[in-house]
Length: 135
Image 1: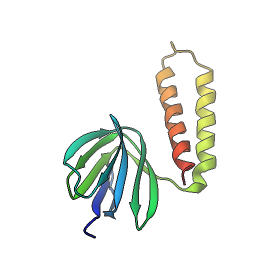
Image 2: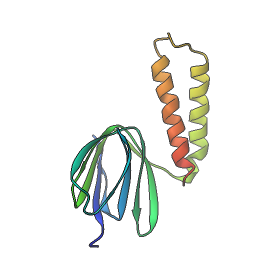
Image 3: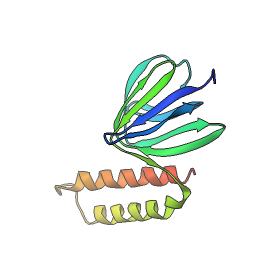
Image 4: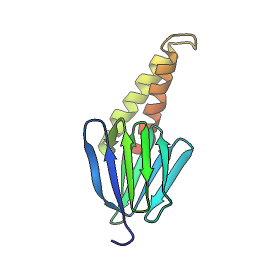
């Protein structure tokens, strides 16, 4: 237990996860970063993307919404808009979301009012699919 880190994942609705883990990896605004026990304290914004942690030599994957992470030498607190645990059974759903977003975007041009929103939906669908394929 001396080499493990407390991880808390909090959304506006609830405390989604709280447990001791070996390490956690997040998608920060400056790129992906990993945290182990004894990490230097810092704050970071979190961008939509993969969040994973290792516990008992097993990795668990999530797709996290935007938010912030506070890291201390003993704890990682992740405050995000949303968190979705990734299961291998979600691959078909993730693929359908990607195809739907691609179809919607294909019918638009860059001047359309909803173009950026549709592009963001495609980026998120691609991220979900990428994470699901790791499980």
